[in-house]
Image 1: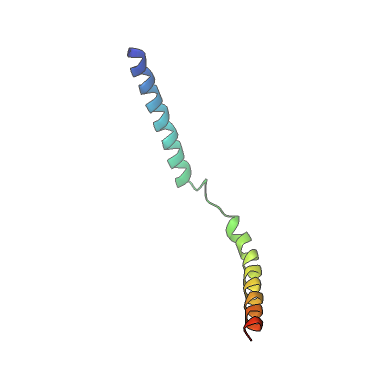
Image 2: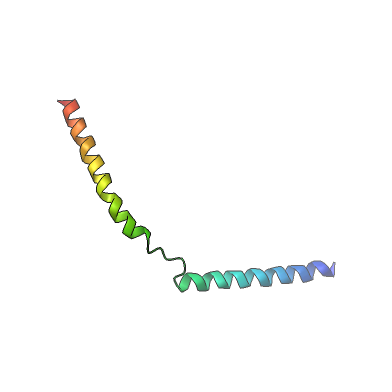
Length: 63
């Protein structure tokens, strides 16, 4: 039964260690995404173009 208490203590210690490492990495900017905003800018033009083409098709169908 005492083995369970030792394993529980070790597992909680390891979990706290990994949580602290995760928090420190997030605060240091390890998970910041610097690539996606620059690529998103390239795809916005195509989305607007598709919308305008669809609007023109809808207008021609309604007339």
